[in-house]
Length: 88
Image (cartoon, rainbow, N blue to C red; front, side, top):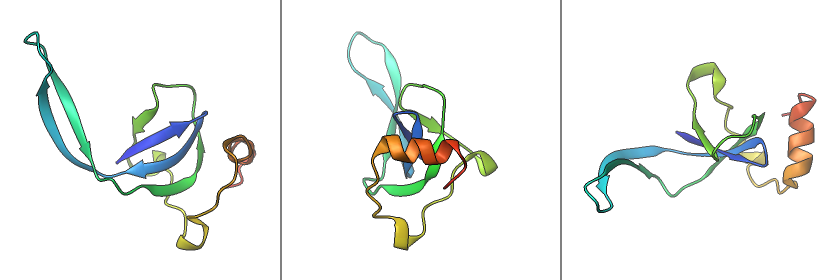
C-alpha cells in the first residue's frame, strides 16, 4: 500500500494494484504506480516531512481504523496533536 502523509500525519492508505513503465516523451522512462481508488483510513501516524506518500512494511505501517471510526472527520491539526501524544 501507499500511505498518504497529510500535514505530517499518515491518514490513509491505497492498495497498489500495478506497476507500469511510463514514457512521457523525450525517451525518458519512469515508473508508474497504479492504485486502487478506494481509500482506507488508518490510525494517526506522525511522520517527518516528505513528498506526500510512503510505502511502509510490517510494524512500520499504521493499522487501518476500525469501521466504527473510519468516518471520523477530525481536523488534520488535531489528528497530528493526538498522534504526537500517542492517541491513535
